Amino acid sequence: MWILGRKGSSGFSACSTAEEVTQGIDGTGLTSIVTGASSGIGKETTRVLALRGVHVVMAVRNTDRGTIVKEAILKENSSAKVDVMELDVSSMASVRKLASEYTSSGHPLNLLINNAGVNAPFALTEDNIELMFGTNHIGHFLLTNLLFETMKSTARESQREGRIVIVASEGHRLVPRGGIRFDKINDESSFNVWSAYGQSKLANILHANELAKHLKEEGAGITCNSLDPGPVATDIMRHHSIINGLVNMFIKYLVKNTPQGAATTCYVALHPQVKGVSGEYFSNSNVGKRTALAKDEELAKKLWDFSLSLTNPK
Image (tube, rainbow, N blue to C red):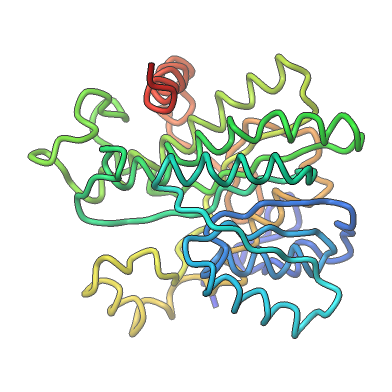
C-alpha cells in the first residue's frame, strides 16, 4: 500500500485504485486505444476501462501476450469488449501501420491513452533516434497526429468529448540544462540514463501542453492532459536487471501497486470532474504541480516543430 493517502480536492488520493476512481461511471459506447496494454499500468487500465463498458483496443508489441491478457479480462468479465493490435511504438513504420489499419477499420476513437514507456541504456531505434526519446515521445507524437482526424470526427459525430491521455512522470524533473537537448538527442558520449529518461518524460508533458492549445484553437471537442502515475512496481525497469531485482524484492513495499498506479490514468480518461479540462498535469487523481520547464510555452512549441521534423521527413 502506497504510504501517502491524503485525499485531494477530487476526493481521491495516492491510495485510490483505478476501480475506485471510476466507480459508477458508464463508459458504454466509448472506444479507446491503450498503448503498452499487455503489462503493468496499461494492463490494469485496459481491464478497468473494459469493466466500465469501454471498447478497448490493446496496442502491444507482443500480440500473443496481449491475447493472453485479453482472454484473462474476458474470463473475469464476459461482456468486455477488447481487441488486440500490434504496435511497436519505437518504430515509426509500426506506428504508421497501426494508424492506417485502425483508420481503415472505420472504428470510432474517443480515448487515446499513450501509456507505453521504456527506461533503458543507450540505444537507437530503427529510425536512428535515442530509444527512450523515440519510444516515450516521438512514437506517441506520431501516433496521436495520425489518429487525430479519426478522433475529431468521432467527437463531432458522437457529440461526446474525446480525451487524449499522456502518461508522463515526476521523472520530468531529472532533466539536463534547458530541458531538451535538441542538438544532442543521439549523443552517446554525453548520455545519462536518468536525465535522458527525464527528458523524454518532460517531452510528454510539453507535447500535451502544446497539443491542448492546438485542440482548443481548432474547436476539436477533444482534451489532452498528461499525468504522473506515481512510483509503481512495473516492468519499465526491465532493462536494468539489478535495479529491477531490487524493486521486485524490497522497493515494491514502498511504492504503489498496479491498481493504484493505473488510477490517475483512468481518472483522467473517464471521470466527469475532468470534463473540459485540458493542458493540465495530474498526479494522484488530482491536478499536480510541474516544473517551470514543463510549463514553458516556447519550449513546447520548439519541441512540437522538432518532433514534426523527425516524423515527417522530406
